[in-house]
Length: 231
Image (tube, rainbow, N blue to C red; front, top):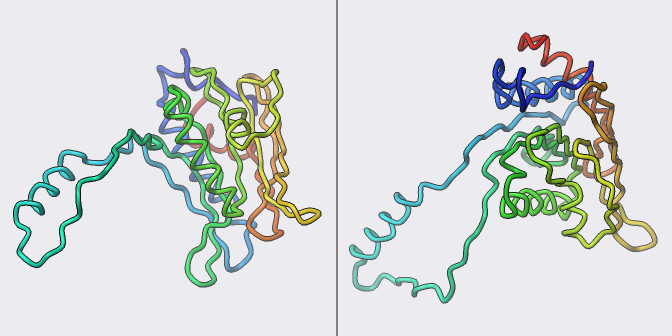
């Protein structure tokens, strides 16, 4: 099914993009659960506008400081306080292995405008993705955001000091797999450009270990459009 522009009129004024992303993550997880073997499961995780309740946290700190009893150790004041950007939007599908308790083995990240709008937001998103890769978690990024021009795939490669092509498409999907070859860690990358008006593609998602999933982005996108009544 041809990819539509969910971030500009006419579609953006008829449907909320975040509702579509929410549903898409759910249907991707449902599709993966049809193929995953026993002992694995996929689950969507969607959170918009994530923030810490700073006021409540600061008030709790004051209360703890004022009510500290004699004999209780109190931490000294920090020697340094710096800004720490958080991922404000999370739209993802997590794949878990059940053995020994749910263990994350794969993640699909659907980019949102908030992930791309500022340097701090892009850094936070890429830091999260790099952490997944450092842990050997298979990663797939899908970016259909037309309202922001930043390229998170390129930013991630720059973060890990990898060579980045100057010609990067605005819309794309990219899959990453951490492997060891010749005694050294290597990152295998699959990258496909996307464009409004063209069908989406099928991508590999490598789970921790040596198991590969087939992620049919076009089929799940078509189902989401149908279920959400997006013509």
